[in-house]
Image 1 (tube, rainbow, N blue to C red):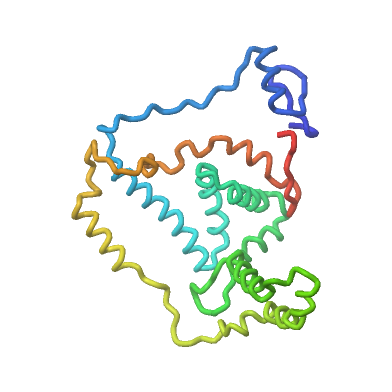
Image 2: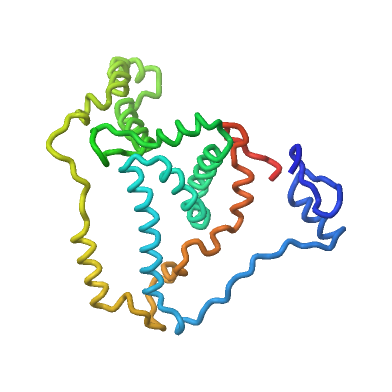
Length: 263
């Protein structure tokens, strides 16, 4: 793509829209874009839906745990890198908002911004209000907390009369936002903070699964919900239309959300 136009792969013609380009290549050059081949469905008697579903859950849990641990540790590099793993999953499940968000983050930290600003962006992915190790929380989560509490304090202030009647609350709201950590006493260390342990819960669930031989491969075993019977690979068919979405929404200028209306 050059100057907002798409070039033909066989001649020097350029077009403003992708659809027009495809029609030109099909008519003039007898070229059609290859269709995505769908894998033939395996016979139900050759599949073990329960095992496939459990393995898929374990892989998605490990993917989520990677990000969760990175946030607790305040490791911005792993947090940013996790977005690269999550991008195909969001695209496959139709989460367009999160797909675009991952695209912006990856693009800005992969060369769009200067090195010093990139380092600041990566390092400030988390915030620590309690002090100590492994007490970090995501900066976006912190902003959501402020947003939620500010909306509660300013509820109903939409008309002139309501704003005037509740105007005395706004100075307190501003002071609350500036000193959120002091008001909530989150910096006060009260005893020792430990991360919650789910070891016993996991052991109990694992024991129940072992008792029903859920981890043994038994062809022909099915579960009732067909939507849960997915392939073991969570990234299978996750790249469909992903390149188009990335090309359309990637910011070409730092901190600018652009969208090519022709694409």
